[in-house]
Length: 419
Image (cartoon, rainbow, N blue to C red; front, side, top):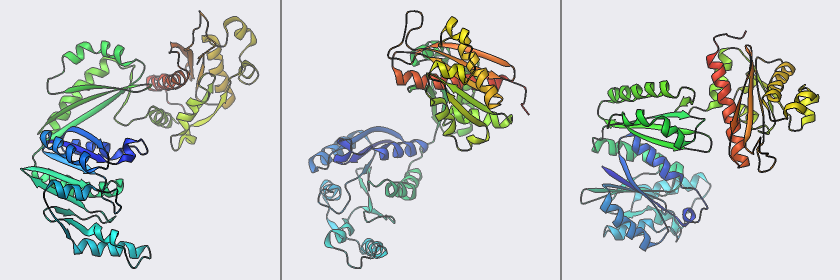
């Protein structure tokens, strides 16, 4: 069974609001094994709605519409659907009573004609009762195809989908099971990662699909399969993930909705360990990532933003001779920064960064995007040099994420529990 989604509203087309409805509906449909073929976003005009309905009907067995069901003159979806199905409007007394009751809760005893007209619904549709609003959902059937019209208000749409539409679709159509598993990687761009995985990808069973989903500082690998036996499908995907871990263990930091900073927090809590940061080129972004996790105060002590060399020297204790001999962006300086913040904050682990975020400040020896990260822990200090790109914000975010991944690897490789 193929599904199309149509979102109706000029506010979407002009960028005034973001179409989150389609994303939510698509996820829920996927969970019950239905295949989404197309998503349309169209204007509040009769011609656009009629034209898109006809097109969607050609490609899909199920068409889900959202938007345009309000009481004002620009909300024309209901009337257009009545035309499309050669139907007539009939006042639904149960819906009318509900609308009146809703307005009474807001202190309005008499509703106007526009509100009363919300109870006028096509005679051939199945009415989907909207307990949160005045716009009812509508379910039409034509030539063994299904058309569902829902309000555009997100919480109203979600309630109708969850209460009526999804259970009905599951009951009517035996759609099997769809299983997705997403592996989170960081450290290589999509093209280079794909090169590393050529053999593994070629040997994937034909029933398993792989998708590369890159973002600004990581690449998600989504494995998908469908069938009737959910346990078998999960076992098949887990077998491939096990092989993946053996190929790129240093790049994987989690699965599904994991966040790197949450993983680090969990590892620190398991060890009863504490953390501090000293940042130069990342400008406090590492601290931002760590502290956006609720409860981070249990393990994170603080940060020093040592942007100027004088702060590296006078606060963190970086030696003047080290700065003169190697420069601020160097292995030696970043390691002294990490050891300095570890000592000052009296913590078990420390992260430090120093680099050239850009767009200026680079040299032939140290071009823009050169970044050093150091991790100091109970077993000493280690550092790594990376070469990022030329875009400043990209460099800051990637450097912060890479530093956290370095810390996670240090934590996971340490067998010693800090008391």
